[in-house]
Image (cartoon, rainbow, N blue to C red; front, side):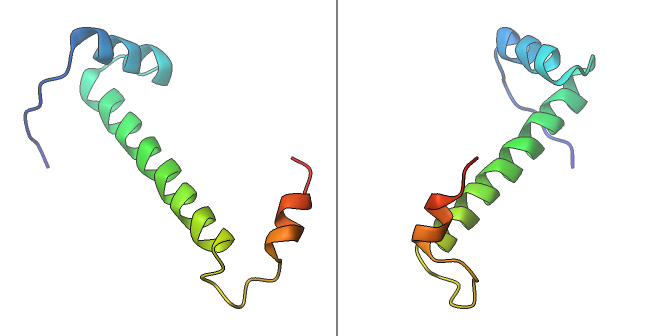
Length: 68
């Protein structure tokens, strides 16, 4: 899908630098995709910690005890 969006030049330049992608469109796409992945993982983790999945094999205390 193509659409037009106004993004500050400095933001686009930062996206290109951070992603290592030299074209604006692909850099913005990569940033949006990575953002969504992280947010979905954060939401899933929150749901697990809230006990939403009864068949999850670890308790909250066990999860908190894991060294990272």
